[in-house]
Amino acid sequence: MLSHIETLIREVDGRYATDNELLFMQNYLQTARLRFNAYQKIQKSERAIIQQVKQKLKATEPQLLRRGKADISAKWQRDTVRVLRFCAHAMLVADEEGLEESLLLWFQSIMRAFKAQQSCDITYKTMQDVVRQYLTPQEAELFCPILARARRLLGQ
Amino acid sequence: MDTPSVSAHKLRQQHPQKHSHYKFSEFFQFNATEGTIADWNGSRNIITSEHFIIGLLEGLEEEVGAASAAVMYSIGVEWGKQDSLFFDQWFEREYNIRPQQANLMFLLETWWWPFTAQGWGRWEIDMTDRQQGFMFINLFDSAVARTLGDVGKPVCYLYAGLYAGFFTEMVRKQLSCIEIQCYSMGETYCKFLLGAKDRIDAAAFWLNEGATASDIENRLRAGYTSS
Amino acid sequence: MTDLTQVLDAQGQPLSTLTVDHFFQQINWSGTQQRSARENSGAPETPYDTVGQFFATFPWQGATAAPSARRLAIDIDEAAFDQLLAEDDALTLDDLSALF
Image (tube, rainbow over all chains, first blue to last red; front, side):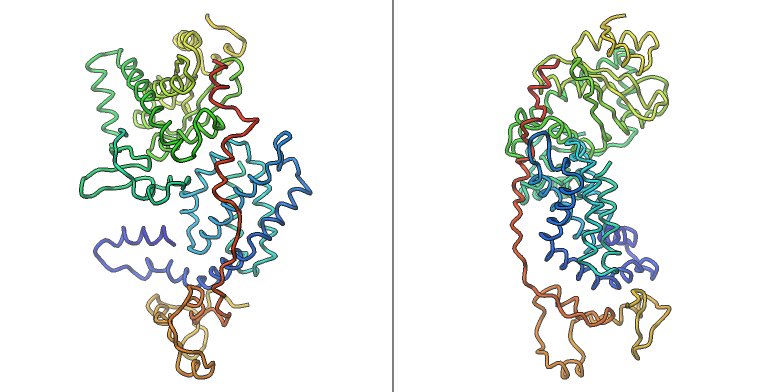
């Protein structure tokens, strides 16, 4: 949405926008209510979502929360919360491109530096399952593709 | 291009602890009244076209001939040394930790990010061979090579110098760097070898003799230091 | 389940095709409730406190109640990102220096 608005302002340059050029606003407004609801649900359930993902990781891939002898689950949690919040925001304002530019590309290189790709891959895969418990199917339809994008970029 | 200056970045002043700040509209601050561009760290930036890069390289070649490669490398070295001092300051300011104490890979990624945002390309550090005293840097979308296109020889001397200068200052050992594979040789990305001078001299010799990047990698891994 | 693309006209009938201006006309931009709805609900005519209330007035998405403005305190320590930078088992510049 925000990227679209920026493009619109640039393209329209001294004339009026056409119906076609404004279509994205219509599409956005049609889903705005849904996006806002989902955003608030995620905000309210953040702690539960994170804990549930962590429990699943602990049960299936416990080595991902350890580095050698050190327990890195606190670090994992900070990173995961950060990404979840950015993703929720991207869903609210319908700006996945912006998410990539403002967080994911940078964070991808940081996750690679810490060799955390596998952890990210499983974390954001699991998170897609977990958030479905908190969102309606329609809301999940909007949010899960964003988590999938985070998984794709951070997980490799 | 960027030159250290005192231009303050307003967004950074408001959000000094924001780390993910490489989005174009956030990283750069366009000062319309002064006609200047500052980046997040307060460096002054100048936007140039590919014509500038071509003009710089061809002009230099016309003036000094074959020595232009060495001149570009030296410019890079000085730039890298200066930038390491600049980086020391902003890294500590942003992360409240001295570069010497930080996780190395994180530190290096953090150093390169402004370059990525400025259009110098993305990189990947290969430290597999660090125990043997050398490492590789893969560079994607070199501004120099992408501009010149396939000219059949390595052209990224500025980058090689930049890496040599930066790492020399950061690790406090005299290091050299050579580009052993280049987009301008028809490869998909550029590859740099960083190490002590004798290693790099050997690689330069092999390269001159027609060795490929993988020949050079193999010889270095086998422990050869000369032909 | 409401079809997201389905927008109703003034009579409450679904509109299959819609021009942008028609669409925009339907948005309750000012957020004021229709007189009859207000009388029926007994809601006072007050400015919106939250974005949630504002969104809740959008007429085409069904009648979900306005979300609460209450913000849940989430005590996850964000500033601790810095701890991530110095790790016991990680390579540092000095380690690198020793290798050359």
